[in-house]
Image 1 (cartoon, one colour):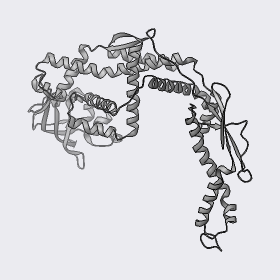
Image 2 (cartoon, rainbow, N blue to C red):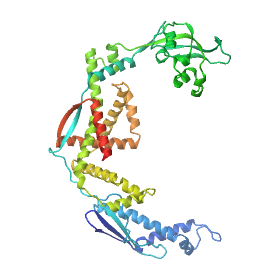
Image 3 (cartoon, rainbow, N blue to C red):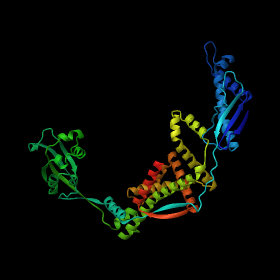
Image 4 (cartoon, rainbow, N blue to C red):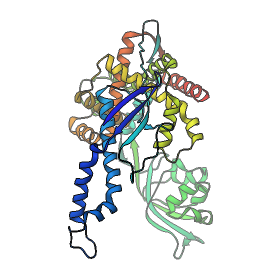
Length: 459
């Protein structure tokens, strides 16, 4: 067996693999004998089928399998041992490769086109300028968060008289001519809130009502025919709402009022899990810090995107063996057309450059990803998820199962590894480039992000 590589140019080459009979003959004979031992044919005992028949029936199939095994083993081994870096996979050469005839050929020559991985020597310097967006947390988001915590940690109380925001429970009965309708709607545990009623006259009937009070109102008028509200209250299908314009009697059995939590030590402790925060000023400052930390992720993502955008711009002159790569895409994606490949190829090139840049930086700066890195990022992400629901302090007992569950999915772990690598590249970029800090509000950053996305779409 002989393997040789001929370079067409700096971007591509042709790999020739010559397989002689001596490379496969013993393996083919061995497998044919195994098949003979298992073969069962009319007129012959199992394992006693003549070898000539076995060869005639199975030699071509066995030979093809052994040749494919040799190719699958020797091609990657040669590329690895000789440090030949390629993009994609070796693909059959269209001009040199002759048709293979497993019936008559004894020696086989295979020719493969290779698309070499081009060198990428790119680094950032102090001449390169990057923007770090520093989040400004204004008073309004803090006010909104304070009110959100007050609502989240508030409490219900039983009341005697209905107010707008109360939750009212009672017996709802459909009427006909002022009396309960035969086989009409009867709901023993109906629940509603006056604040959602659009019909002011009907709403007033509730606002003047007391516990155990009973009165007549019209749900259709109260909700101005809103299908979702009426279907939910009357427990009917939306299609039947238009027909349901009856008066109903409502007997109040329970009035619940929700009162937001007071701004006191109990609330501070419940939100942050400790008694360190002693007053409202400290509470608001802690909220501000937490919001800033949450929004920092958005700044980091934007910075990483800008870093790679700059590196990709520097890699504009990096070129590939386009024809070979396009053929490789077609071969590996059977349902893809040439027209689709041409349309998508610029994005493929950008993805390839992105990966080559990343690989180069990993090698140059010896970037390592440890289990501690992955666990730390996973814990941070889970904490951010809890924070979105108002849980700024999470106990280890609650945190650990969620992190462990994340780590069970290899796809998630791979995503975390990529994120860790990108975070470390971002740290390197902050050391190498000139960083300009720009203070922005979350709304301004969202606008900047949207403008960049629109620009990318245009390009």
